[in-house]
Length: 409
Image (cartoon, rainbow, N blue to C red; front, top):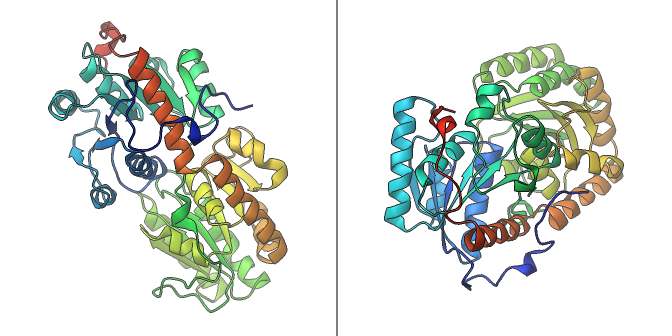
């Protein structure tokens, strides 16, 4: 059962453009950065969806390539060093956020992740401006981290296991943590499965394509397992291709593994693309997606079958029977998966790539699931309902930070 105090459908909120006495009008979303990543992409999608609902939305972050998408939508972006723990930059961020709130007439701040939450908590102390926080994953939970984590007036967890982590490991008040899953803009993923691939990719016509989208920093287990499985996949399904999109500190390690896989296979079976901004187009050409979290949800929105594999371990094929388990863990294998191994990945890839009917059934299930429970419109409506509650009843009630407030995140 999903733990939430939110309305069950977007229809509970007032129509876009209406402003009731309990609805804040000008919102500031605070994020660490706006580079490629699930949380960052969600902030941009949420800002745009809230704007469509008639709210005046602004965003503060340390910047990144996604900031341009905000500007294209007419959403102001303000640079603040919200991704740094250095004392002088934290102080600058606190002063900057406080000044921004006063200058722009911000009525509510919604902070995403631990550093922006800490900065916002300090900046808003005594101001009467409500603070909502969102936590997108599992965070370090030692005594120091428990001391510096800030919840605001209310906290959002993006899945049940994140909520459990915040309460059990970081000491959050369970009455002040609700589950609101991240949402996907379905319009970005509405296309035919026969869509052409980006022209620079070396994909033979009709080739079975596997797509993996991930940060290639500390989370490279799946990309390396795909490289290990690539020669055998090419042998079992001639013409099959694996595409890996993402960047990070271990990008070159993954490229070297792909090069070795291609040498062993005697063909260009695996391509490592680096950072990509055209994931919908890549999904349009993919037959199967491998990933977790937002990458899995985006593939589901594109009606592609998904193999759950990532930093939480290997979960296997996302099927009707396992949907509830994966949902509770934000479409990861946290807590019940096993280490990612090529020996597990290969038979699941072969099964999906070789069964068009199965791909169609699982793809339709994924698209329907996102439409019913994970659309950005639904998420925005639920978030706006929280804004209303905080604006009506919680403004100015947070105490000034005590001694623990001086610690740095």
